[in-house]
Image 1: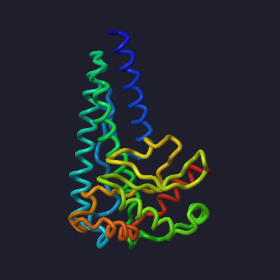
Image 2 (image 1 turned 30 degrees about the vertical axis):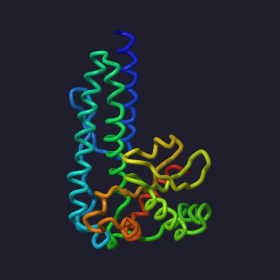
Image 3 (image 1 turned 180 degrees about the vertical axis):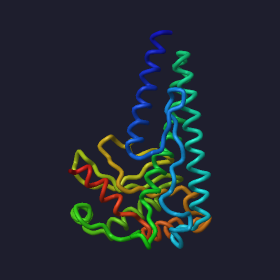
Length: 238
């Protein structure tokens, strides 16, 4: 029993370290009875500020309902994990990993997604310049080619998931990656840094675009916040 509890505590400690790294990335969190939990981050713009690219109705439902659900279930899974560790229930610790990955990933991904968006009046859609703009030209040929590639891979993704512009720190190149469901980009490797993520779950666009995902992907670039991507890229390559 003592050996199982020790192994379980190590697993829990790893998840707490993930939580701390997410907090550094700007995710809202709090301590409760020694257990770190998470809460819904505020948006830096009104729900209707991204129209006509994304409707106010979609933004409100996406933020208040879908993102909140991931957070609620993530916190619940963390509490269950803490209890299982304290009881030395290693099998339950293992069982909870999928819920933690799915709901924790949903929280990570959406927290990045909101920062990737910006109203047109505040600079949304303005093309990237500086070092990131140069890197895009070098690795993809042009911004237009990158957008076409991300749109194509996002449209082709079966079921639900995400399409990412990532920095591969090992290869020192930009990559386009996709992840299924709510898998965060880190599941592809710790060398991948998310610069830009686009949600291609139906809840991100269906009320407005129905089943025409390519139209959603085409229009979302009008409200992409390249300044955020430039900042993250600059910090990583400095």
